[in-house]
Image 1 (cartoon, one colour):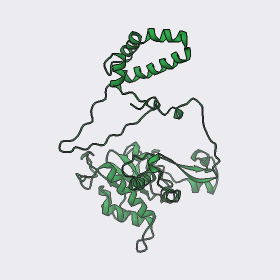
Image 2 (image 1 turned 90 degrees about the vertical axis):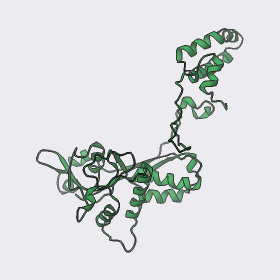
Image 3 (image 1 turned 30 degrees about the vertical axis):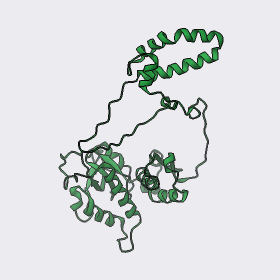
Image 4 (image 1 turned 180 degrees about the vertical axis):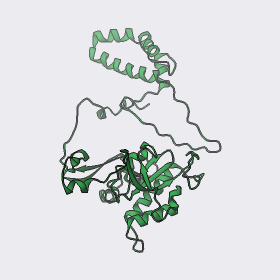
Length: 322
């Protein structure tokens, strides 16, 4: 089995049933191999230790609960399954699993930095292309990851692609430090609006895309989600929209707020898309649309475009007006 024992094979070697649990698997080792390991230890302790490690791996595989077969919708013979493998599953690639710490320290200059960790499925992408993506989506890791996955899938459609993106702003004062500063500079940095009761508020426009499976109980819904739109398809459409907003055509309006309002009117599934002239939600108070919305809206700079994010209503991008 290529060095990775299946629960069925491991259980057969130990004389137990797959998914038997740790106690039963250990009992199988004691029954079948304990005496042999004791004899081997007298001749070669190192080989005995190696044998015990192998048996421990077999016991771990045999004890695991048997995974249920994936559900396949009626009339559809295909199913997409993703399985995350941990270090304990990587029995064969031992050089990848070690106790030594391997690290490299790099110095980042002040400014915006974009770090990306790619799986082997994205090896066909050139560094120049990754730089272009970082230029467009440098402050939006989700959108950048989607674009990298999309491009990589075009080069190698049968390979899985994994992307982790991080946007770092180095050398910029934190909000807490900025609040300690006195004078005009402090006033420039302060972009929050606070009600007399102490609640924060922002004015934002939201481009919302609903997808199949999202609840219809939405009083602000402009229309129902298309029956055939998946979450992945909705996110990719928002990714393309962000790219179009960042790189307008010559005949499009120069004002980003105007272009965003036009996109909302054309695409958004939220009633706010019909509000003139900015297609915005008006003043939004903290807690009004949930913590997922607040985490993005109140962290966004005035005049800024948000990354793609998900709420119970669907997937969004925001533009902050005030």
